[in-house]
Picture 1 (spheres, rainbow, N blue to C red):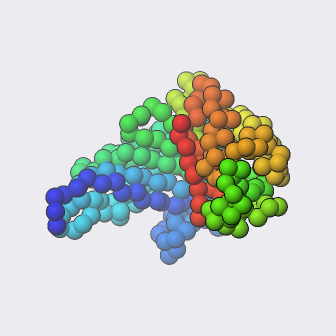
Picture 2: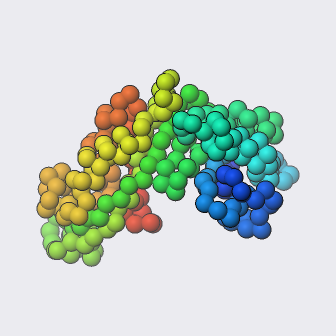
Length: 268
Ligand code: NI
């Protein structure tokens, strides 16, 4: 092997919180544990550590130690904050920021915690990063359905056919686009939130979803009258429509999935 290298490793831990959750280790390592017999919040936590890869084992950090750190130290803390007496008015930003230090302290000394992502629903995630420790990113997913045709006026019919294939069929075709919008900022001193999720959703709905949903992008949307509605250009147009709208939070990334296999992202 050559020189030892610094690398990042991410481990995802899945668990239910709430009263009545089983405490014992589940047999289903895919779904995670504690499991639950009743309806209870189901959370996903992704911890990213940085460090030197051990030359002998090839490990940066044994993932068992990350799991143990989360399950031993964080689940009781999160449960206490979300489900018991402290839950009144608790916001996800506070929960995220409150778990960073205990998680960091519980990890082996040779690794550095650089990112923590807490997914509170399959569509809403909060992220902390070491380089901006008082900032939280909020990422919410949206979707819209639209038709488009990939076509460039400046190319001949034959060239359009060669470049875009069936995507240039004259009457267009449709996609269910999935949009992930990430905003970031320091949590408000009073409310604890970076941005009310309701406000985030209202802005994205007004500026993007209502504009593009169930439309033919080339024919119905001015931005694509002369601009080819590729997923790259759609991503850029959505960024322009949202940039500056979330003050004091800042737009930090837009990712658009054209299909589950293809996405573009833009960070300004
Ligand atoms: Ni297409």
